Structure formats: C-alpha cells, structure tokens
Amino acid sequence: MSNKYYKTLVETDVSKRLMSLIILIALTTWVHHIYGGIVYDTIYRIVVPTLTIPFFLVATFYIQYLIIKKSNKMGKNMFALAVSFFWILPIGLIEGGYNHILKNVL
Picture 1 (cartoon, rainbow, N blue to C red):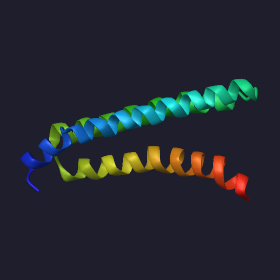
Picture 2: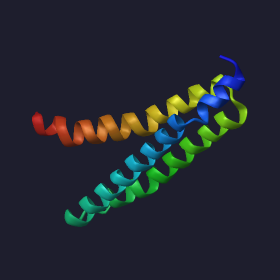
Picture 3: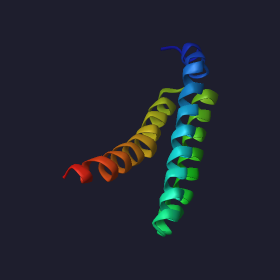
Picture 4: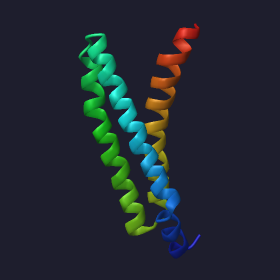
C-alpha cells in the first residue's frame, strides 16, 4: 500500500467515526463509574477511570496523529495495538465482559 493511498485512508470518515466511537466509549464508561462510585460509596470507582481514561484518549489520539503525519506502517500497527490494549481489552472484555456478565453467570 502506498503512503499516498494510506494517508487518504486514515483521513477518511471511517477514521473520524472510529475516534468518535472511542470518545463515546470513554464518556459512557466514565459516567457509568462515577454513578457507581456515588451510589455504592466507593471512591476507587471514581478515581481509577478519571485517571486512566484521559491517558488512554491522549495516547490513542497521539498515535492517530502520528499515522496521519507520517503515514507509515509502524504507526498503523501502534494504533491497532493502542485501540486493542486501551479500549477493547480493559474496557470491553475485562470491565464489560467479566465484571458485568461472566461473574454474574458464574
């Protein structure tokens, strides 16, 4: 894949939609934990997402910025890893999958 084609691909609506969905996931997760922290009087439910979610967002946006700026394959792989390790694994599988589904089934 040529750099010109890849750069065009990254700047498309798909990329913008992906980042919009990541922001939506971050916001709903944060609100969910703030609510749980207040209702169940557990401060860690408020502190942990308040500290980690901004870091996840900044890291993800920075890697996407690098992809757009440099248009290289390493940036593409870093972005895929960032989305996987910041959003899919901890929030999707661990938080959503285990904490809200699997432990209730078991």
